[in-house]
Image (cartoon, rainbow, N blue to C red; front, side, top):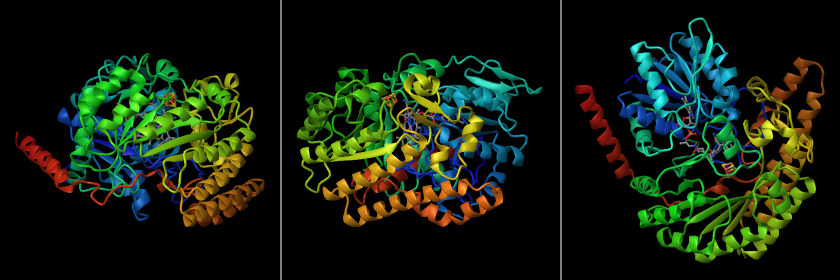
Length: 580
Ligand code: B12
Ligand code: SF4
């Protein structure tokens, strides 16, 4: 098997999750990942294909996924056999603070001579703390690191210094930290692409399918994504990807957009090998109505189902045009709450009434499903407000007449486990009514191995204490689950299983709290360990059944013949390169 020049590693959120007894809670119920967040940053595919295009061989190794699918998979053994010129580890999402650093430590112990670079949003935010750690040699900051990473590879290959590499934090041989300017913030996104062809090719080239799959169950539900932009125009208070955060920490004062024509080409490229839904990341209308119109025009006709998100209500004409190019499209929108006052305190300034009109217009135009997301942990949101949101979901479903067919599908989940670093509320907690429990990377790393999500949470609000956040999340989830059952949105057996898991999780939270009050540490640990089998059972799909998120896909979800052709073409290219 060929050795890679660069190995990009994705860690589980807690490295030894197979050993620890941790009630993760409903942290990942509304995303495709399991609670250890096995999904790697989508930017891995663009990093890999950019470096490949410049002559480097890159391997993505999703350790989290491999550890999840096989209990026998030994991460240490797998890493021992690798000899790249550089290890790259993502610390994109803060919930990976434990796993990413443990993997870095392991790589350093096994291969003291191979340098290690960390990157991603959280690595950018915590770069000063990271670079002081012995297991970290480099941190690449910013939301776009393809070119800086290439320059780092070139410098390592040529034995050159690192002063000139943009966005790089590094240590010299005396251990002194240097912070190069964050000067690479591209406005032109045309040189990067989310290259799924790379993923398929790499699976064959490194004979490791499980190592490149993005999340557990992807082959059954091979959803893909196309990216509209880097950055965002909004500043939602708890978001580490807000305009505020991009300006202050990623050097980006305005979002950069992929052109609508490129975006359309990305979608059609995916449709060559996939019949499954493509998720368009970012509201198409952020760059103005003309952007959306050019996208529709360039797309012509979508050959695969499209899922789009809205950051604010869109007019009827938008859906009518969308329906012409993507019949049966699906939408999602995060209303966050039913209360305009609370939504506005969160930083979103439209009304529930406007949102309802938008849902109505979308459905009238032919939208086949409209997912609506609500959150627990907002500024000015108390327990009554959360339960009011569930009550509102009932009226929403009544209004949109879900007679068994999911047309509008509500989801509710807590802001967990962390308030995003660099978000307005993280930077000015008092101002927005938040109280932080953990501030540094090290504090977050330690918190992640706490026995339940209540202790992992890095915040509480003026309106909901940590205990109340947990309690009201479960209470609201129970009610929403019953509502969905009564409207025929989830089958009775699934609803019953969810209800059982919620009750079990509530019992476990109480038991863990009792155990935590025991002063004898050894006894405490023994009792926590004994709970592990129950904790593991309660850990997945707590507040809702994860599969509720999925859209129906047919049995021909991947066009295997076309996928194989893509892989063949690249393998032939490999051979040609090896000869020259
Ligand atoms: C799309 C998206 C998702 C998608 C994930 C798609 C994916 N696989 O990446 C979904 C919806 C599934 C998702 C889920 C989550 N997300 Co999200 N997500 C986003 C969003 C909207 C855009 C990010 C994006 O696509 N960027 C573009 C791609 C192309 O680039 P990229 O992946 O970021 O990679 C580049 C750089 O980050 C960097 N980089 C990344 N990794 C590495 C590694 C190395 C070694 C190097 C050198 C560089 C590097 O270089 C890459 C190439 O230029 C941002 C908000 C925003 N406005 O940006 C939030 C955001 C990143 N998500 C966030 C969070 C908290 C989550 C969740 C933890 C939420 C939860 N509790 O469920 C989960 C975690 C998912 C998991 N791992 O399983 C926070 C992160 C805050 C933080 N610092 O921790 C953000 C900032 C805002 C938010 N709250 O949504 N998310
Ligand atoms: S949560 Fe708000 S600020 Fe963050 S990416 Fe979404 S719309 Fe932008």
